[in-house]
Image 1: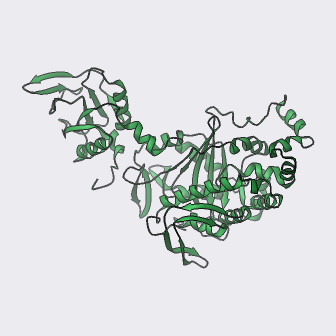
Image 2 (image 1 turned 90 degrees about the vertical axis):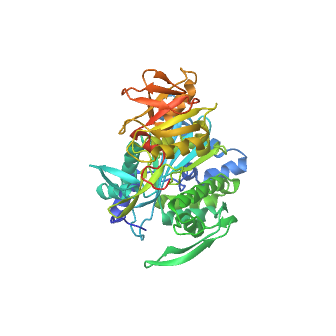
Image 3 (image 1 turned 135 degrees about the horizontal axis):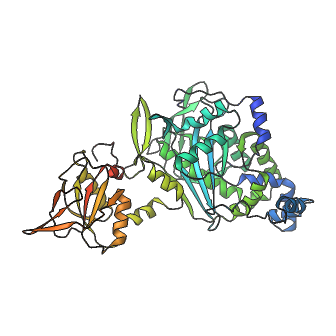
Length: 491
């Protein structure tokens, strides 16, 4: 594992004990399902099976539980929806995967996933955040986001996960309600306690550089198609970073992690798991030693019905540096980092705030619903930028009959001139969003000049329109640099 020059000792025994006293452990790696499993226990499972009732009904029948619930709420209203009463009917949970004791850089986060549960529609979403994402630390300085937990654990032993959730909440401008942290050993043990998981491997691949003991490497491989994985195999599947056949990136790995999470969910909710007291006991034993969370027992109880009701509408997003991705690569003092395509973080924050929208749905929303003709002029100091933006707009379905350079350069903000007299307000709003542009405050003054039109812009420049079909004149400024990867070349 790349330590990025940061090495932080894993929590020592005293810190572990302190953390255990403050934290309720739950039972799932990267999912919301472990809490109620840990709480219920083998006895309740057995009662539910023999009586033909639900686990939750049996829990409510345990001596003293009803009284405790009534005391906690004052009127018995704590109910199964108490935790679900968030301002936006969403529960956001941050999942952190660390190497743990015995691994290089034990507190570096090998996996970061922000998950969201919509308590009204029962939809579930996962957003994978790459470990190489640049995390701003002030004074125009950055470090990789996978070091945030390590630094927090170093400064506040036992509270690294909680403080990391607070930091990432600010970065992504989204509320994070809870955090779950698990280490590699705990993950493998948990999968084994489940009896393994069943997945469908999307692509065959071989990784000749998988980490082995004593700083060595070994070869692992997976074949395309259905597969049953035990804990060690599942760990290899989610950790592999150097596979061939398109599986050698962190982005591909993030996708595999999400596949495993889905499989864990299915296995946890299967009758074979819930009705097996021995398996429930094994799961509890694993999670009490390897998984840390700030979820309380009542949180677990109230989450349980929501978890079991999750439908198949699971959205899985991965931030990438692909041509249509949200990130761009850069070299910072010799370190590989990924930066937001839109430097103000607006695109990534929008995804974090609306995780249930797929990338495909997002693209559809950017397409015009009627035929729209644009003329694009480059008002930036980047040569050829109008041509690059033109290709992007054409890919979204816009007509771009002509491009050129604006009379003036160095625009900070892109500007849209509406030549339709407000005929297409929805399209104007859509263009504003795509280009991060301002809409001209006044209608342009058109000047007839033979067979061409000219307009006087807000800065009193006269821009000639080449095409008679042009409906919107766009003068590009630096605010639109996030539309395409501004730091990349040859695009």
